[in-house]
Amino acid sequence: MVARTVALEPDSPLWPGDALLDLLPTDAPVTWLRRGEGLVGWGVAAQLRTSGPTRFADAAKWWAETVGRAEVLDEVREPGTGLVSFGTFAFADEPGDSVLTVPAVLVGRRGDRTWVTTVSPAEGPAVAPDVRVRDVPPAPVGLTFADGALDGERWMSVVADAVARISAGELEKVVLARDLVATATEPLDVRWPLRRLAAGYPMCWTFHVDGMFGATPELLVRRERGLVTSRVLAGTIRRTGDDERDLALAATLARSSKDLEEHEYAVRSVADALEPHCSSMNVPEAPFVLHLPNVMHLATDVNGVVHDAATVSSLQLAEALHPSAAVGGTPTPEATELISRIECMDRGRYAGPVGWMDASGDGEWGIALRSGFHEGDTVRLFAGCGVVADSDPESELAESQAKFVPVRDALAD
Image: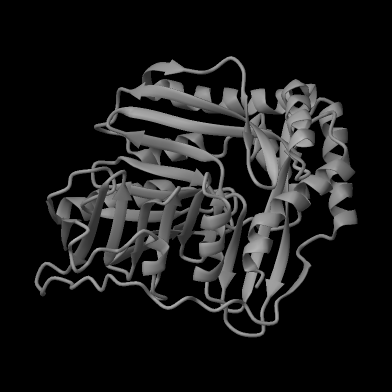
């Protein structure tokens, strides 16, 4: 295949305007956007579906072989130009499928630079990019919501069981998730919630790959030109909408021993996973409070300088980090085993890595949180909570309800 990247200027007939999401057709759209910048694409030039414990290794091998066979003509030379793949990976080894896909057309924006990439068969004519503003997608029709695997009462019982196990010393923390099923009376256009999520949560990464979509506040790993970053979130409190009250709640969150303990586990797991790949690292001693429209989180940005960029891609770093304590627990093997026994649902790609990677191995991978999986007329919404010894089941249920809000509201008319 041949990937061609050209710069777009405001006087170009292909100039996309300000809102990249407005360009998306219904043909296999992919997105990775934050604060108006990032990548959108459509069409499928190449794709791998894989599953099981070798899903990351399978994808890394396929991508290396695809890059090796491709011709890349790139006049922009920014991260995200040239040949780019988008991925969404299952949380667990079994069950669940994972996908790595190369869009036929991709439009990107970074600062004051905008570009378009087309991917064509080596033997055929170059793809002509149909870059234009599309019609506004329709709102979901006749939407209803129902409990997923467990209702609230049964899920609180699972949380109580986990707290008892933690108190007995079996583990330190486990992240438990629940699902909610939204059903429309007609097939749902995923571009509708994507636009609403991007507008409502500009500080998050709005993503869509192969049905998995959301606005994640958590960056699992970014690798760019030898530098690596991971944003860790753990510890949550719901916002009230009253600014003065929310500032007081933020101070409470920053002092909460339960939330600080949960956060420390998550930061430690990320730092331990990145350390073998970094020649130097910066791990802040204390978290900051990240304010989002619906909740506030304790957050820490872990940074490092990678020494093995020539042999380890951003996807392989994501594999090394997954699952972090923020989505699995501590110790991770015990926590993930407990999740499989008591959570009573298949997470699919919820809380798995989602993002993009270019031919150099640079890329950005988030954790598929504040997310849903769309198929036909149905969206399965997900929310999870970190459970430690001091956790209260009713409080965890309330937190999960708050985490459903972004996708639930984005589906509304």
